[in-house]
Length: 120
Image (cartoon, one colour):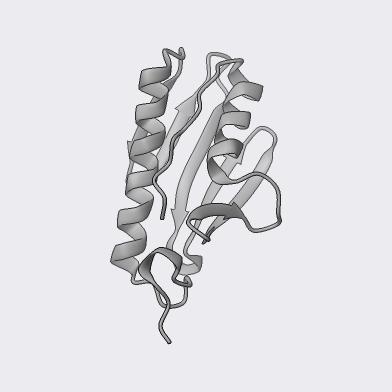
């Protein structure tokens, strides 16, 4: 029995499929920030999304292709996310990717952004 594309394991997911899914996630985060009216600057370069807060702190969201994970680095710590049941789940338990990004943005900037990420 083979895994379905939406619930496949990272071991069988192609690099191009993983990259496309991460690109969609980064775009969704950007669009969420734009539509929220939050006073945040952001930029995506080479698959790394950097969100700049007014106080000069940054939140970095990037892909880790070898492990098929998305990593988030923020003042509150570093977090790793892997696909599970259609969501990007924290590898140590805890918040899913969208909730973690929202929490990091709120904690660092006071802004409220609710990313609506694509189901993977």
